[in-house]
Length: 238
Image 1 (tube, rainbow, N blue to C red):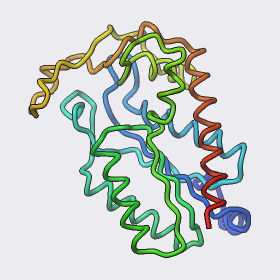
Image 2: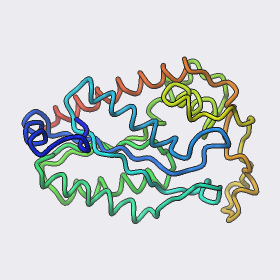
Image 3: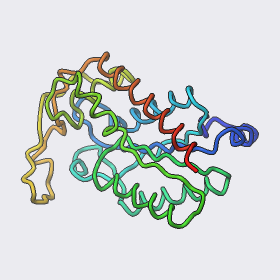
Image 4: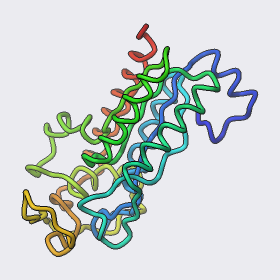
């Protein structure tokens, strides 16, 4: 059940059947020269919407902004601080809890370390503060990583590469503008640098040319099935 499309009466009826809310998190972030800035949001939101067709669960509108690190200097990337992400996550959970929801699945289409840490910190805080609450924090990208290794051809594929391009070819082919060239960031680890674009001009980590719609469909279906199982598990926890 999509919250943004529901009426008060539908919400009251729905909460008698489920007390679980999925909150999807995305970004406004560069994804090479061929994928839209909303790539992370599109991927995760389409997955949870399909999951909601298969199992009774509430789905919140996506949080479109996230914490950006290696991409924050690239054109189009617009992010928020880790503190802002923690606070908005806490506020959403507290408000939803007041309306009777008890199980919260925070699932992110963006897998950045600081971004995911902020979500986990918010979840840990809420678990300590509120009794009778269950929270799961998931990186949707990491969730499918093992499955994708069975058919993804690019070794160490990552941001805007074969995986994400395949997924967008399946979910929103009209938004895929050709293919960016194969590229891997050359950041001087372990050092932190301000001008990350200097070391990663195209914003791609992998090989988009290897992407296919069929690969995208396989990853999508696997992710949907995984989310459905997580919904079933969280509702069994006592």
